[in-house]
Image: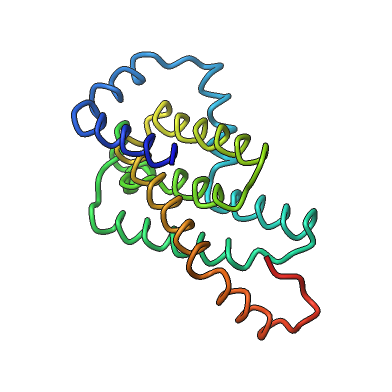
Length: 186
């Protein structure tokens, strides 16, 4: 519930103050904080999140995270479709550079929040804090507006919750049929 509240607050605030927040961070860049945020941006990238969560499930839990893979894939697909549809420029976009890629919604936010429903207990709070720092890093570094990260958060978390609640049993069944009964499926 708190994830929905935060995402709606970011979206509502962003509708009125996206450009002001971006201008504030443009004028308040610090080398040490930028380096720190770069680490979180790297760890919160879609590929990194996919690998981290897969390693946790396969290595530690000894299970195949088929439901997470499906939810993650669906979330990222929706995000990249919306990026192509809206074609919103990034706040600090440098003309002619790779940084001109689409801003709305944030793929990093989608990725980290698509994993949140699959954590429980203290790890859920750890991943929530990690995800919020990743989101902040994207706004601080000028790659996204508040509305971008709020929408990414809502997409990732919302789709994963729907998949987990309504599709987990069917995804597990199909995965067992494909891989055989010897594999532990999550």
